[in-house]
Length: 470
Image (cartoon, rainbow, N blue to C red; front, side):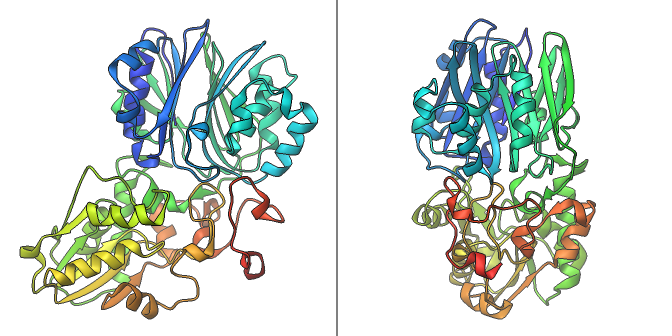
């Protein structure tokens, strides 16, 4: 997500560049909403940021405040009707909203919405067509009897459960909010004549904004012609997503004041201490495995090298929506350097094993290129539990690790050996207290209450044995 309030800037172009910096967080659809104080315009479509927008489109989006979004679907299908920002036009004004995360009480919210206003009366067809939790939230804010959007937000936000970072706007005001646990990152930046909010600080950098601070858990920020003010809608109980540190966030972003690259290098050093091996070369699975591989090589004394070439024009295979697309993406994305790996004992460092597709094919490609041994080292613990807070592995059946030993997983991916960093070491590398981290995908301890029947939630598919296993 990206939002900007800047009266003398081309806010549509600034939002476009901000979304470009955040493309790694979602590749299915992109959208921008802009207001000039009198009317709001929204343009969104399926595809990457550069595919959705062109110069003519951006020039048509004139105004002084804007929000933008790149979507990675976790609830609701990957279709146009679920693209963001969502938009509702009412007699009292327009509302556009972008959401990063996943709500866990959508059934409860649907009931609340039905009590407030019949579905047939909701003033925009998108509410009926969309299947996302974001559309429910947009309808709740729009249908609030509160006289202002700020007051509506203070009424609605405390009722939300799950992970949510929001940017939303009416014709005159930009809002940003973060759930009381602060599961997903959200940063505030300053430009010469305005303010910027973004899911990662890398997006602030690209538009020339100065990082000011993180938006706090349970905080609502309001930005208008009078400047910036802050309201608290819930008591903070921080539970930052640990998966952001090992995979989702860009290495040049800051989370909780720490550069992600530096955290990942430290993870690699701790990984080398826990899982040493005799080898000739340390190589990363680029790009997300690179910082940890640098750390592993530095700690172990084994030379670091580039054994795999990455095609920069292929997106993240993990966040593509179908298994066949993921497998095709892996084949297109990586190719081994035979001259580098042939005859070598390799340590291959990657960030995670989720479904096992990437590692299985990487090991096979390296052996075909002549590698003598392939030892896989992973800079996260085994991913054994589904995420209900905004990452798309919603069933244990999708995961490789549950019920398998390290040796069994090593055989499944074809590696000579396999080592995962311990959960304690991973948490240590973040410099965040353990009790302030969400690590549910690694240990099954969910910090935010889940519904009695998670399968009843909008767009969430749960393996039928999950509740018994928990």
